[in-house]
Every structure is written in structure tokens, then in C-alpha cells.
View (cartoon, rainbow, N blue to C red):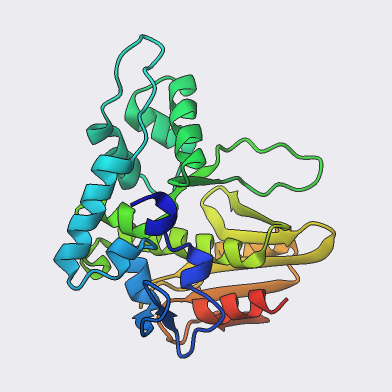
Length: 275
């Protein structure tokens, strides 16, 4: 099994043929489509071996085998010490959605070693970095946020079979990364993705396009109780988006003010693909 055979890219899984937030896919040409909810794709990830497994346990086991056999070798640190993948990958999973500076501190490694690990993980499409948005002429003082590209592998490293069993914080960060990855993929090669932050205020995703004046401010929520914060509104005042969108995993009313659009992930993806 090579990577191309195993992998179902996010933009292919969450494709334009979705109806009623259901994914249709098939393992081989001529087979009947298998249908998955977006939540199932979030829980299991984008690899066929995991997504098409007949049971949760089989999917969980497949992801464990993949991590053990297919994850890249890691470099030695600046003191020529080995980096134990059985320690570092779970730690990076626990810090999903955290700044690179927090990751470096938690790992107890020098900046150069952590940078090497992240570069390898990016090259292998395991992690992605989300830099901070800054106004023209400003320099960011924050390190980028680190997210897992595949939510199924993230859940396996966390030992979580079902996202609903995760803590609110971990579940929220997991869905956040999943949604950001899907949106950026659907937005196309000209998209520029960033996070906005000022103090404790944050906008999960600021999306722009090269040569296009549009700017979207996107907040992502997987919770039944999360309310739109005042910080989101302050962020919109600073970033001046052409659209302000809340992506809600659950189709529930949410308090807010002004011209804020409330959409589910599938609606945003459909719109982006039709651009």
C-alpha cells in the first residue's frame, strides 16, 4: 500500500457531490458508493483504510499500524540524541492547535530541532502551520499555530476512538483543524490562510486570495454551548473582512450581532468550489 492508494485527500472526500452533508466515495472503480457523514470523516480521517473499515476498532487499528509503519524518521537533535517518535508524536497531538513556541517548550528541544521536525512533518503532509494575520507594515510577534492535517491520525495518537468522548478543548481544536484544512483546500491554490489574534482575542481563520480584495473572517465551533465572543467582533473591526462567517458543526442558533453568516462546513465548501 503506497500513500496514493491509502490517501483520500480532504478535498476529494469533502467533494462537490455532497448532498445533505453526506460524502459519497468508492474504493475501486465500479463499486457502489459508500456514504459517510462529515462527522465520520472527521472522526476517522481521510485515509481509505481507516474511512472504509467496517468497525470503529478496525479503523482505529489501521491508523495505529499506519503511524508505526509509515511515519517518517526523525532527525537527531543538536546534541546528537535520538528523538523517540513514540514520545514526540503523541506530545504534538496533545498540543494540536497550539503555537509553535508552546510546542518547543513542551518538547524540551532546541528551536532548530523542533523546526526540523516540523519541516519533515509538513513535507510528509502530517502537520500544517497557520501563521498570524498582521496589518500591512507590521511584523508578527507570534509563532504560527500547529495543526494535524489528518484528524483520524490525531485521534489515534490521542487514544480517542470517538470525538464525542474527547474533552471540550481537544474536540474543539480537532474540529477546528479539520475544518480549516478542508476550507483552505477548497479555497484553491491562490488562497492565503492565517489566524488573527490580539491578546486573548482570536479569529480562527482569516482567508484571503491573491489579487482579490475579498477577505473572510471565519470562526469555527463544534460545541453546543460556545457563544460568539466579543473578541471575534474586535477582530473583525481590525481585519475589516468582506464577510464574517461562523462555521457551526451543529445546526444550532448562536448569539451574535451584525451581518454575521452562520453556515455549516459543507455549505462553505460548496460555495468555495463554485467560485
